[in-house]
Image (cartoon, rainbow, N blue to C red; front, top):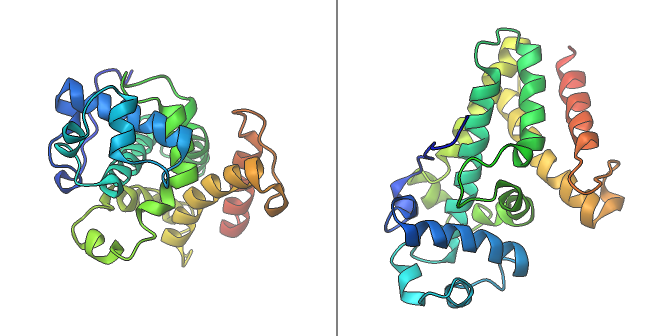
Length: 225
C-alpha cells in the first residue's frame, strides 16, 4: 500500500536530504535505533558514527546538530501519521466515524505495515513518545516555528480540528482538542509504561487498546456526541 512513498519535510531541517542517498537513509535508520537504545541526552554524532560504522564528519554532512536530527525524526513521524489518516479516512463522510479512525490511527500508527525499509515505525514511535517534546520545548522554538519546522504537526492538528468542527460546529476549542489527542496518546502510553500512578490505563507490550478507549471517551464526552 505505502511501499515507495516519500515523506516530504522542510528543507531547513537538514543540510542534505537523507532520503536521497544510501548513507542518509542509514543515518536515519541508525539514529532511531540508537536514540531508542541510549536516550537523546546520551546520544551524539560520534556515538552514532561508531554505531553505524561510519565517520562523524559524514553525519554532519546531513544534519547541523543532534537537535535538528531529532526535529527531523519527529517531523517524519507526524507526516507518516498524517499519511495514514489520509489513507484510512479517504471517502468517509461521517465525521464521527472519521474521528474514531483518527484516534485509532494516532494510537496505533506504529503497528502499521512497514512502509519504508530504513525506518522502523514501531521504534520511531517509542522515540517520539520518550523524546518528542524535546524537539519543541526549547528556547529556539519561536525561531524554528517561524522557519516552518513544525508545519507537519500543525497541518496534522488542523486536519483533526476540521473533523471535530464537522462533528460539532459550535465547539470552541477544536485545535486544543486535536493537539491534546496527540499529546494524551503519547503521554499516557509513557505514563503507563514508566509512571503508572499518573494514568488509569494499562499498556501490555504493544497493546494500546485502553489508551484508544480513553481518547474516545474524552473526545466524544467533550463534544457531546
